Every structure is written in structure tokens, then in C-alpha cells.
Image (cartoon, rainbow over all chains, first blue to last red; front, side):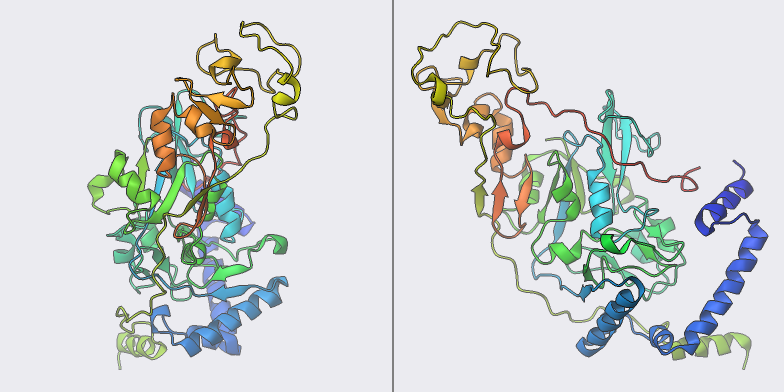
Length: 306
Length: 174
């Protein structure tokens, strides 16, 4: 497929119409102009435009902001949600581990994540790739495998998601500091601060970030009402989002949704500073792997063979 | 005023480039120790449990033979060598007990002691929380399930599963 044809196909898919690149840009620019004019007119739009970075918000700001988001969701979809702001716990650094000998590629984690994090149908934070058994060769991995039953013989399955790096290239790439590493190691995005330039997406070597090409449409009955400002609240169009280790759950002591959904128990999660945690024991006893170690990103996501 | 300085002034006014310094954060309370573990009880695997409901008045017959009634496991038998027979794992002396490879009696509620007598590495991992499903809380009480929650003891390998739908990769990879 030529780049031109691919772009045309993408525009058709994402925006629901045939168009050329020129036409696409024209529409996009005109749309942007109209959108900015209309947001400038209504009060909430101005408020949004002048809102502060998450790290600058006072408790009072947060209260107002979260109430506004809750009201917006209620008006749009009729669902009463709670937007919370759980804080990192002192002395906690989250680590996720995955036993590759148990993963059979059933993608239950992918769908559980989508429901937990209010993802529209075209966005998934997790991707399970199919690799030849005995290799972790990502370059030749199959992303869209779709046999009747998994696992296929001669194949291994490798779930990939945000690795919550200690030295994240995505954070360095962000020109407006809309994404940063939290004290507990989770890399978060302030969706209201993100300008949608997608530099972070290009910088991430794990293909962990996703872009909202359009206003996310989620069936009201599937909206998870337990939301947090930095994780699973419904994102606006035109911003980048990613896995946050379900911080609205994990900062309250629960396991991430992907872990609880895994029927083979391949996922382990916990505080690396706690010597009784599963992940600490995993690191002490197992031979572990990280993806693309040579890049020096220092992931907080480990793979092992149990 | 040049155009670029206008733009800069506008940006400053709207607060786009305000310096984002790491602020002093209020941390939540540190988590309690994560060592509390409970093993979940689980229901009987077959409707005729306990075995003594039929076997109490019968002499045990240790000869391997083909069983046609009541004993036929739902998924067939495929565990270890093909000459496997009931009394490799079920106790001949007390039909309501299991036995390890060394003959130590094991209660049905603690199958891990039996399974671990062959799969010792898995037992060690299970005790450390590295094998099996984790339920509960990463920093609080955990619920651990024993082997037979997930594995059919007569056919312990996982059945193949129907995968969820593949991702829409069009346009994302060339």
C-alpha cells in the first residue's frame, strides 16, 4: 500500500469518509478553527483552556475540576462516575512481572484492561504478540494472530504494555511536561495538559502509547464509574494515553485488572521495596528479562520463565 | 512587537510554558506488610465426593483395570505416565485421603502437598506466590488457590482457549 493510499484508508476508517491528504488537512484545520472558536465562547471551555498542570493544582482546584469532569460525563452519557485522585504510597515502587511459560495468548488481559480503563473499541493499551517458540524476536512478531484456539504449537506469546521505565524516553520527548514519572514509578499523563503532538508516542520503543483520533465513544453500560484523574477517566479526543498500572486500583491496594483477568495466573504485581512481595521474590529467584534492555530505559516490567 | 514575541506573550498569558517543577507531594500511608496469605477452600470436584460414600463397605481392588462407571473423569485421564492408576495418588488404606509419592497421607483440601511430591519446583513457586492466580490485595491479605482450582488433577494441562479479538493493526504497522 502506498503511503497516500494508506492515509486515505486511515482517514476513511477514523473519520468515516473518503478524502485526500489535502482535503484531510483542510478539514482538520477548519475543524480546529471552529472548535477553538466554540470552546472560547462557553465558560467551561475557557476554564479548560486556563486550567493548571496537575502538579500545580490545589485541593480546591482538584475538587472543582473533578466535579466538572463528573458533570460532563453525566451530561454526555448519563452515567454517574467518581473521579478520584489516589496518591502514591510512601516507600512503594510498583513492578509488574509476567511468566512467559504460562501465557497462552488468550488476550483476556487486553479486554479486561479495556473495560477497566474505559477504552473505545479502537484503542487497546495491551498487545499480546505471537513469537516463534524459543525466541523473543519482536521484529517478526505477529500482532493480529487470530486462530480458533490458542496456543498454537511452536509459538510463544508475549504481552507488551507500558513498561513504566525508570528512564522513560517518552517523558524526555514531551515538550510541555504533560507526562512524568510519579514517585511510585508509574508514568502518567495529564490529559488536560497534553497538546497531542505525539512526540512521546514516537519516542516510546515499546509501542505503549495510544492516540485518541476521535472523541471516544463507549457504551454507557460499559463505562467504569470508578475513575481517577491520572488514569482511567474518559479521555478527550486528541490526547495520548497509556497503561497506568491501573493506579486507581493499585494505589488502593488492589491488583491491576489485567492480572485478575489472566486465567493462567501469568501476571505478578507488587511493591519491589517489600521483601515479602511476589515481585521481589521473583527477582530474587528467577532469571528475568526486560524488553530492549540495550536501550537503557530500565523498565519496571519483567518477564520470566516460571 | 514582532509576531513571534506576540505569540510568546500569548503563550505566557495562557500559562502553557509555566515551569513544572516536582512539587512536594502528600503521600498516602505506607502499605502494611504483604505476607498474610490464606488458602481458599474449594468445592468437591465430583458429585460423588466423598469417595467413602460408596467405598466404605467395599474391599479396595488395587489391580489396574478399565473403569466404566462413576469414575470416568470428565475430560479423560492424561497425567504423567500412561500406566497411571487411582492408587498412585489416592490412598489405598483410607479412600478419603490422597497419598504422596512416598505414601504420606494428604487431605483432599491440601492437594498441593501431593502435587508437590512430584512437582516440587512448582510447589516452591506457589508458596512464594509465583505460581497460580493471585487474589486479594498486593499489600494486604491474599487469597491463594490450591492446584486443583485451576488444574484438573486427572488432566492437568490447560485446555486450549478461544482468544479475544485481534487488535486493529491497519495503519499502525507497515
